[in-house]
Image 1: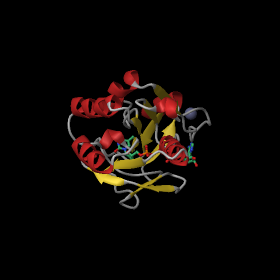
Image 2 (image 1 turned 120 degrees about the vertical axis):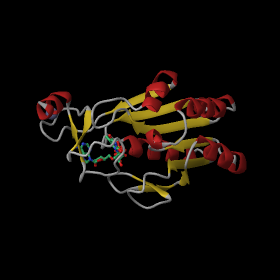
Image 3 (image 1 turned 90 degrees about the horizontal axis):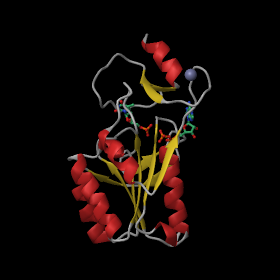
Image 4 (image 1 turned 90 degrees about the vertical axis):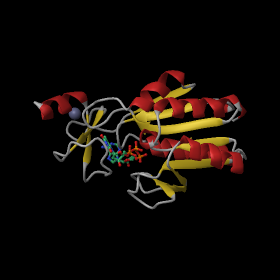
Length: 188
Ligand SMILES: Nc1ncnc2c1ncn2[C@@H]1O[C@H](COP(=O)(O)OP(=O)(O)O)[C@@H](O)[C@H]1O
Ligand SMILES: Cc1cn([C@H]2C[C@H](O)[C@@H](COP(=O)(O)O)O2)c(=O)[nH]c1=O
Ligand SMILES: [Zn+2]
């Protein structure tokens, strides 16, 4: 795992595409390789247990709740991890510039940073932080859920309700992964 020192790994895609599962798998592998790993998640995502990252398959991993990148920097000074995992990065508070600056700071110090986050919101608009992270990633994985209408690779997380606010925590009660064609049909 030495080759990942100072590298940025980005897992993105729609909901249910396996981003969190991939983050968990990566962190477990680094742990097996005897690296000190710490997982963080934004305090806003209270869907499941507070101090855990939970996948849609209900596998989980301990995580530290944070408000912004400064919290992650502070915890990292104290706990001195080799590998930092951040789930749901689209919910991390503060400016995108600050998040990128913080992540670049970790990479300069030769830490491995693994992030998972949505590429787009329910309207198909990109989340700004992922838009900035994708080109600077060393390893970029765009994951796909299965479209619940036709079985093709999904492209977007369609919101089932008419609510318009950008942030709305939920799972299959609120969202369904759709391919582009099924999404366009839905919106016609
Ligand atoms: N339509 C779907 N397509 C793919 N996986 C699905 C779907 N619905 C539920 N799942 C479940 O979601 C899991 C992925 O969960 P998770 O890693 O939490 O995804 P993400 O973090 O991208 O939302 C899959 O392993 C699968 O069991
Ligand atoms: C598309 C979309 C999603 N959300 C919320 C819904 C969930 O709580 C998370 C995504 O979780 P996952 O691990 O990727 O499944 O984000 C939102 O607030 N706004 C959206 O547009
Ligand atoms: Zn479809």
